[in-house]
Image (cartoon, rainbow, N blue to C red; front, side):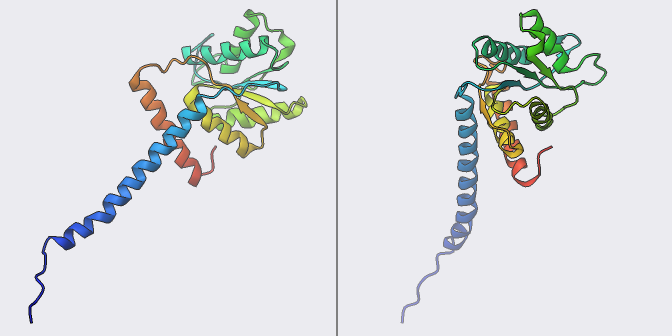
Length: 206
């Protein structure tokens, strides 16, 4: 009776298959999440609403950073086009700052001709979640419900996901231009948003 010869390399090859398959699934999943973030950031859903919520970004004393400037300008443009009658600026004080991000944004909007009574601000938030949570309270106090959220394209997916988490009736209108233009800065931004997507699945956002 002939014995079957064992192929010594067969079993090690089979042992490698599952890790490689798992790695492939993980890579495809991450690419899918990244593609979804890019897709959401490429859609402008602006429609008539009660308010336009501009998410905060860095400010340098009395000047908004280039990233924040783009957000503020887009919010003002939506206001001027009649999408909503109120502008909500968010963002608290940076370390050692004299003015909050939202105060800097309000000054920018006033210089652009937005009436003072059309601007609402909150000055306590430091994160995207806090931006939106404080905005929700502000909107509730003024009887405002439907909002347009303004931020950078790659930030929009997370912002809208947090809106759903907080019960805010929101659509997104990403800035048509972004300061994250180079491949390196866009890749870093996208990688950070992919990380936050997964973090928020296991840890309550704050």
